[in-house]
Structure formats: C-alpha cells, structure tokens
Image 1 (cartoon, rainbow, N blue to C red):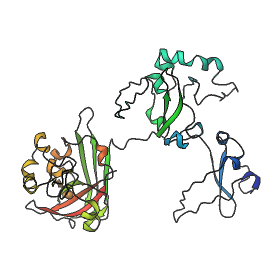
Image 2: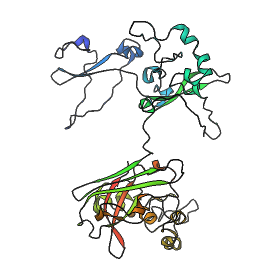
Image 3: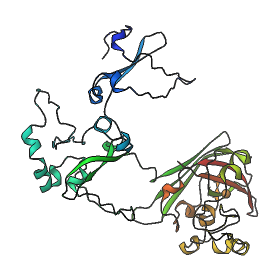
Image 4: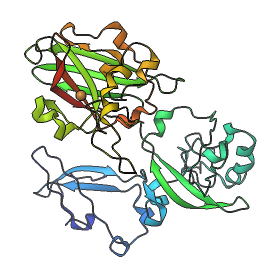
Length: 381
Ligand SMILES: [Cu+2]
C-alpha cells in the first residue's frame, strides 16, 4: 500500500500515462492492456499488488488490491485463465490441487494445503461431498455431459455442501474439458455467477404524478404461474380521472409518462409470444414462415371472447402480456388493486426472466371501461 499519499514516485508507477476522464458525476470507465513485456513479470504475479489512481495534480486519491475476479467468455480468448478466475473456491480448506488456498499460509506461516493433504484430495472428495471444496461441483456431484448433436444439457444435481449461495456471487463458473479416461485439465469457458433477475421483476413508476411499483414473481413448484403485485403510493387523477387502468407488458422498453414516452414507437405492442392476437398484440401485421399473417382479422376479432374471466382456462386465451385481460383492471385511486388481482395464475408464462427489459404500460379507461390512452410506462427489471 502507498505510504505517502502525496508522493509521486515514478518508479512506483510504471504505467503512469494511463488516463481516465471522469464525467460530471465523477464517474469514469475504461480499460487498457499491459503487454507482458511492459509488465516485465508473469501476469499472475500482479495478483495481490496494488493499483493506484492519481488525480490530475499527481496526488494519490485511491487504491485497490488486484484480486482474481470473475471470468466471462472463452478460455481461448484468455477470459478464464488462473489469473482471471483464480483457483477453486475453497473456504473450508479442502485443498484440491487447484484450490485457491494452494500456496497460501495460515497465521502461523504454515502452508494451508500441505502436499499430503493435497495428494489425498480426490480420494476424500470421492467418498463424501463434505470433503470436497465448496467450488468443486463435479467432484461433489458429477461431470456435465453435453450432448453434442443438440448442444443441450439438462442434468439435475443435488449439492449438499453449499453453505451460503450468496458467497458465490461474482465468482465464476468454469468449465473444463475432460478426455475419455476422465482426466480433466483444459479450461474451455467461464461465466460469472450473478443473481438471477428472472426470479422477481419490478417496474417502478416514479414521477410527480405517479409513484407506484408493479412486481411479478414465480410461484415455487408451480410451473407457468406467477404472482403480480401492484402498489400505488400516489396517483394524480389528472393522469386518468377514473383511476381505472389497463396494464400490459409491452414488447420493448419505455419509461415515463404519456404517448411521447410510452407510445407504440417506444414500447411496441403487447408481449404475445404465443400468438393470441389481441388487437394490440405485437404480432399484428407480422407474418409466419409461409408469409401468412400470424393474426388474421377474424382471429383478432375473437380475442375478447377468448381472453378474460377468472378461470385459468380463460387466461390461457390471453396474450402473455395482457395482464388486465387476465386479472382485471388496476384501481389506482384506491392505491391498491382488487383482491383478486393480487395473485395471478398465468397460464403461459414459463420464464419470468423473458419479461426483463420489456415495459409495463398503464392505459387509462373511461367509466364505460373503454381503454385507450397510454398514460405511463416503466421497464421491468
Ligand atoms: Cu398496452
């Protein structure tokens, strides 16, 4: 770590000419590559060292230790090597040959992973999951088998030794290639473990005239079912005098108030992956592989007869994105939704993650129940 915060020691900063320019918020992003010859040492030797950021005047204003981080991409592009992704996650010192504890010492200066402990790893881990590194998924369970012809793999594994899934966040999942006799070396690909946004999505309406959020989450163990919740903390009746709102998931993202922000050119039509063809379906005007209209006029006209009503069966006739068609209008002036709107059994939504980045659009309805105007929209994220 730097000892004198104001000292500028050229020898200490071999790459002093790398510059970032921050924006009005003081934020800057950038990257640069230091060639091996410039570094003058192996790439791995950079780990544990400190990067220092100076201000324009040369003063040291920030520093951070270089740690192995997450890797994303193909090993052939240099994305998954030991320098990038480090060794196996091994918080319990199980000490496989690739444990990230290899070469590290305890507080008495002794090697955490002795040669003996390391040598016995595969036998120990084979006997019991508890003896494996937390990060040794194939050791604990089994190899992934990717079927070459289809490139699909669906295998289920039961991991009994994962104390805290949250600790895996921002680590990387690395795939190694094994040969026929089971010997595995080469890292072929890696990806970062991030919290799945597919679990819960939320559209937040935040404006002078509307303060509301609409969330959707899956129901555990029940495929294709979801619970929607709408919470209105403030709603200006100027936006819609009746306070009765139709609400839909629209195909593309839009955020703000009125047609300028939420019109068809911004948010598109209703999300309709199953071609249910309401008049505002995103599939209107599109053709199938034979060149025929997906939504014929007659089919479109029959939509309101197919969609609507409390039963699951009738919901199946609705576009996936037609939330009010499935469960009724939001009563925004009551700052809540009808009881029966709170939970929605959705017959055609398999992966909520598919809604991510699309928008939730609110339409104003008149007293007669006719709904047109798009009054507000927010992105599901
Ligand atoms: Cu809509």
